[in-house]
Length: 198
Image 1 (tube, one colour):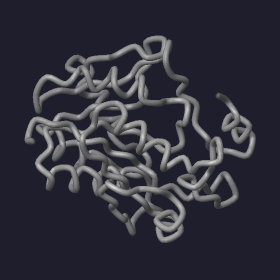
Image 2 (cartoon, rainbow, N blue to C red):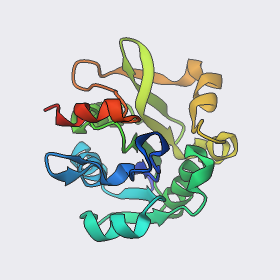
Image 3 (cartoon, rainbow, N blue to C red):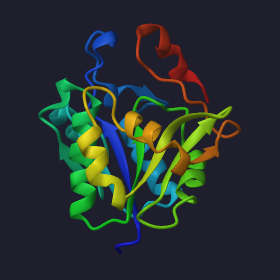
Image 4 (cartoon, one colour):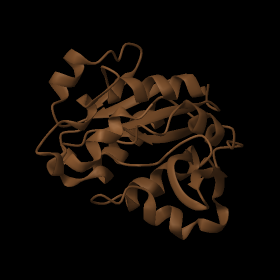
């Protein structure tokens, strides 16, 4: 089990630029994004999926089908994505996984195909890999367990693993996913029509 890679879904955002809508509960095709993303991580080949909740956590638990997932509540979610990444990595580390495939709940255009492609780059707990779109690094990101502690230390505010990956660029495998995924974010009301994309 130590060499398996867990899915890690960051789904704690409060959608401040969306008027306070809980991002995890935005719907696509009648289903909450958190449910679809957790399903995609499982479909990509992650035997376990850890879901970090924050804003509206109780409502998300009540409305989304997350059976079989390890649900982690992050009371510090207002401080930014970094705190959710730290909480999620601690959960994955406690489970003894060899790595974490990190996905974001507000990127519904990134599904199982891209996740599986990045997951396939795993070689050892020292692995670092990320999806790329026209050569530009994006999500999902694959963090081998040997990097968990350092990534957690570097995760601050809304920066997540960005700075750490930039510092370790020469050791990060980029996996082109532009042909199977679209890395748009649902951040503002103007982005909501993207949820109707097939």
